[in-house]
Length: 404
Ligand SMILES: Nc1nc2c(c(=O)[nH]1)N[C@H]1C(S)=C(S)[C@@H](COP(=O)(O)OP(=O)(O)OC[C@H]3O[C@@H](n4cnc5c(N)ncnc54)[C@H](O)[C@@H]3O)O[C@H]1N2
Ligand code: MOO
Image 1 (tube, rainbow, N blue to C red):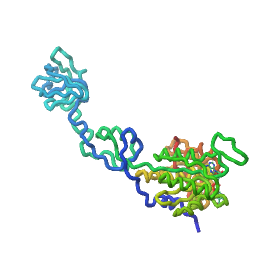
Image 2 (spheres, helix red, strand yellow):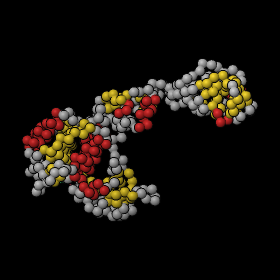
Image 3 (cartoon, rainbow, N blue to C red):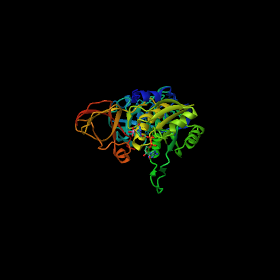
């Protein structure tokens, strides 16, 4: 039977995913969270007409003939309005952000005036309405300015503050428990014994998850035994994690216990093994409310699978609308050979080109163990199953990797 396609596997990962419940979060902590409800403004901005400049609030009719000499009858600073209507021949000293009284219909900037004791001489014509920000020019009470599912930017935070929200309803962040498996793994800084290697995968995967707004918990390393793997899976369930991500032990070897232990715990497998390179032995399923992503152990495979499947799952659980990676056009920077049955994601370098499309040059060696090549890559070139050979300069489809 042919292996499940990448598209079908992604659809299976996202099937039935609902955004996590909402929680209030202080504005200061809301950056990059996902808004759970439409946000109507609680106020009109500006609430009344305000001066955009330092100068004099006047009646336009009084300065129809220039120069005009007006009596200054008071002063309006930001936050200090004045209940005093202008009569013919009068002006009010006003500063930026000051409330423009109804009786004034223009503001003359002070550079166009000369002060003479209690009087001001207006030397330049100023059109009616000039230098006045009308009430509501930015937004009005009730206007929905930020929609549900918005991924909140820095500018959204100031806007929400201006709308008078001290906190915002956002979706809870997904929690990800990460488990490494393998008797050969030791932590960075250790002196590896014969045949041992340094655990590396989890560092990129947790950073990737956190970069997408998830909370990541490190469950450490489970030895290659049924008991150790089962115990770690139980710890993940007890932690209440929304997603369990495992690395390694996903293949068909005698020491690959992840699938077996998950099945013994009652996981409903959605798929195991897909038409993907790197990452064929990837697994996905559900264990009660917890979603499980079983990643292959090879460092590149684990990262590419997490990038392709864990990231959209985090985004969907977070309530984001922009769940999918952007697939963009590029030009091949080198020849590529015909592809086989698995959809391939070639690690590539990206360079800008003069005609606008970037040039994606697949890195020479594509083995799924090569961390050095993965770290040097800036994009993935997508090669569909059985794609024919293609030459340098031909169009291709890429997904950019995160550069942070
Ligand atoms: N007979 C077959 N053998 C293999 C197949 C297959 O279809 N038939 N698939 C191959 C493919 S493709 C992959 S990918 C790997 C994945 O296997 P596992 O998920 O069981 O991975 P492990 O054997 O546990 O580890 C593979 C490799 O990666 C190293 N590793 C594991 N975890 C980490 C970690 N956290 N940090 C750094 N490196 C890690 C591990 O030491 C191994 O060298 O299976 C192929 N075999
Ligand atoms: O599919 Mo495996 O991930 O090539 O090494």
